[in-house]
Image: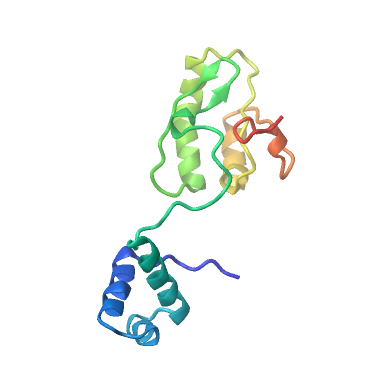
Length: 156
């Protein structure tokens, strides 16, 4: 099943306004071009929580605090880069180009250090692999689906 796009806060508020104006879920759905089931879910959420804001979602608890997110090395943390939008391969390579060597130098990494990242698609993209190869960075190859090697996500 394909993931659907989330409705804007404005649309969710319009649904509640129309509901309060005694419109039916079907009528609201037709007027705004939204499925009746979605309209019903938004109205139920509003009745329960008195808000149309996104609520915290369930999931595995984060093993580290947002403040603790950093590049991990044997000698300490590297530069912390805050990414405010969805990252793609080009953005990842740009971050590496501006920060990988300066971090390695600041950490006084000795010759032969090995760069490690996970198997995220932007990390394993051909363009990223090629960029790392051209820059002569040694990369630790990771087996697929292996959380055991990730210190952030509770590996052993």
